[in-house]
Length: 128
Image (cartoon, rainbow, N blue to C red):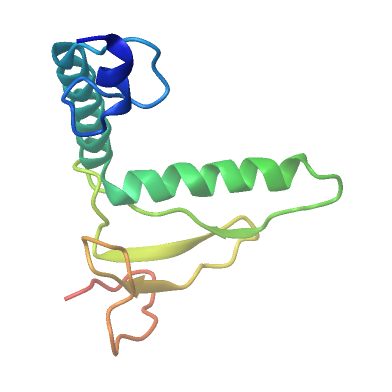
């Protein structure tokens, strides 16, 4: 059997578009396993960091970029309050550099979204 017949047959287990010679299926399996391992590592890192830690990093980046701009003074901002597992603490508060207390609210620990029907809280209040 010549190689051109092998390469032109998409049904062949040795056919890979764009290659000029037969492909070893074991190499493809190795590549697939490597990609799976990389995806698992990425997912594990996301889980280890948790959604709150990811949002915190984004917020810090945004504040840093805003302060780099000339004349932009930030006095109030939100930084997520995370627990050690990377989830949101039930009570979140706005930070303030102007001496005023920022507003606070209760959130879902998994996604950081404000609880339906909840209102702003005084800074010294606790979430249910």
